[in-house]
Length: 254
Image (tube, rainbow, N blue to C red; front, side, top):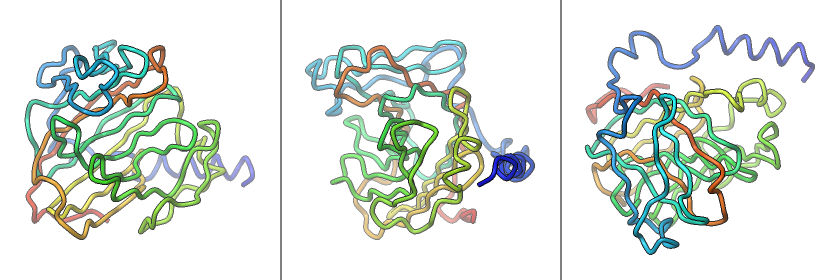
């Protein structure tokens, strides 16, 4: 793609369906007050907290209006999970993570981290907003792109059998995804077996219909810091976290 084409592509995104509309926004409720972790708690019950023998679940603090997570010990992570449980819902948040740590957005999470995960594997070989069965035998594991060695380059070779191709041209990725800035991630889960849809910056990334009931009807919303390696000097960052509760009969957006 020529440079001018990339600019036109990016401009088109900005003037098109970028994020949620003002009308949609009014239906969302904030679940993070921007100053404290009220309504959330750390769980050290997942396998990512083995290094601490499940005594701590990573380091989670609020800095400059964002939830900031990191390993508290080399190789020791965990999850930050809502006190409240959710069934059918849509969640919108902004992320600005360092490129290196493995994270995730857990949907209907248990205290030990079993969940439908909207992946935030923000590292070489990873992806953002693919769908993964965390603690569910790794099923599904569907994504339609992966990072190469840097955040600016992706490959569209799929993992699993994703039902939709990536809507973003690989050459346009650096203009669509703004590393070092805040990007919007959105996920929606309805029903059980669930229908899960994810978006980045208003563009649909993945959609998946599970075929069997393999997890609970409701659970917490959780953010993850993955265990393994030494990522104590790197952080994940999330802000403007809002949720819209849905009825199981709510129409699904295209």
